[in-house]
Length: 297
Image (cartoon, rainbow, N blue to C red):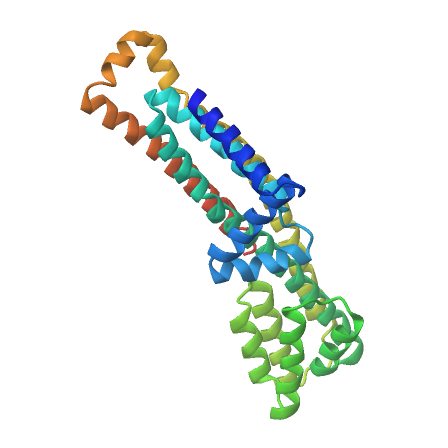
């Protein structure tokens, strides 16, 4: 552990001497940002850009803090398991390499939540506009002009309007939007408007009101689910971190000297590696589930 601290100090001194006269901390945080942009997958860059626009993306300083925190935790836990600096450094590198994946999952969740909110705005306002105009295309134009939509939903609604005018019918426009955003509320609203348009129903107030109530109920359930899942996520992380303390329990039961003797034999060492890797995999699977299943449907 002392060697790791000395290496960190030496690295800082080296950067300071190379970039004397500049803000060394600013330089390091900038390089972290450059590394994320260079090595991140394309899909991550796309959702990250929208996350930035929403003001929910981590700053370079926050990412640097995350790297330091993960390095310290991974170093402390792996050293506590194996008392080996080489193994500790390897685990630290692997854990830090997983941070872009965690950032990608978080940005996907933020982007998915944003899309659902925009879909809610799209469906709610289209129903309200239709109640006034009694025309689906005019309702879409009213929603666009109101300025409540943002891209990519805004661009897709404009595409729907162009398709409806070009075809002289709304069928293809509805299919386009339903396929791109396969949400329950979008599909049902489009089916309702298609039925109203094709059958020429005169009194649509009750149907629209029921549809609006259906949307409100779904939205309420989604937001309640998000709160419950966020609370469960905190408890899940606490439980996952507690699993890493199994090594301390084993050391307490056996004694440190006996534990160190066990580390010199292959079978217990392999089992400890398996426990450490399995616990990490368990946490990653939980993070993936939490960030991908946003409860929009």
